[in-house]
Image (cartoon, rainbow, N blue to C red; front, side):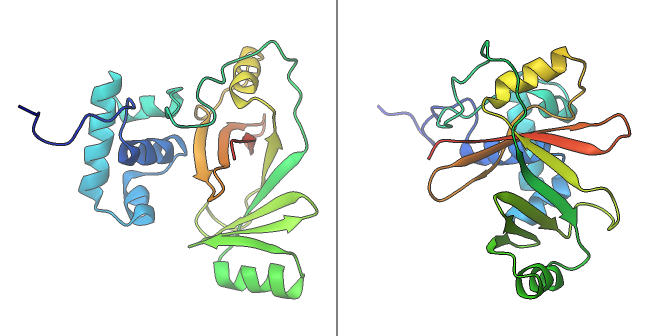
Amino acid sequence: MGTRGRPRHPDVLTPAEWHVVHAVRHGMSNREIARRRGVSLDAVKFHVANALLKLGLERRAELRTWRGVPADSALHGQGGSDMVLQLGTIGQIARPVSNIQTAVDFYGGTLGLPHLYTFGDLAFFDCGGTRLFLSANDGPVGEPSVLYFRVGNIQSAYDELRARGVEFENAPHLIHKHDNGVEEWMAFFPDPDGHLLAIMAQVGG
């Protein structure tokens, strides 16, 4: 006789739970996750509770520093290495805007920057190889822009910078998976003045 209900998922978390955990590690509130994903607040709370139970964690805040990677991710199995840490080029600069459509019209239409893609209230442009990330949701306009440094191995870079005393806000986590399979992973930390910086890596594809 077969077992009843859904078959057990081969990963430690289900895809829906991974989506929520990635968002939690990115610093989003349950309400913001629900709005971004188009689901109920109760559904998000349910996934958070399930993830905590499966991972043996007690508090939601512990998800921020949990180092897990999905089994089907290109980053899975890519641990630390003996490579010397070398921050690469600035891969992305984030800038808060008051209205995303007005900003898209200005940066794309007026300034002529190549428009890469838009997701809701997020828009991306190419600035000669450095990506400009505009967001109408990341805080008041006027705050310093976030600099994102490219690294070859984000897990290794994270470990090395922590060993040097850098206090990360979260563990490396998946930000987005493109249609071509390329995954974007990031981890955020403050500089001495409290301004946000990040390391980023693209894997897979």
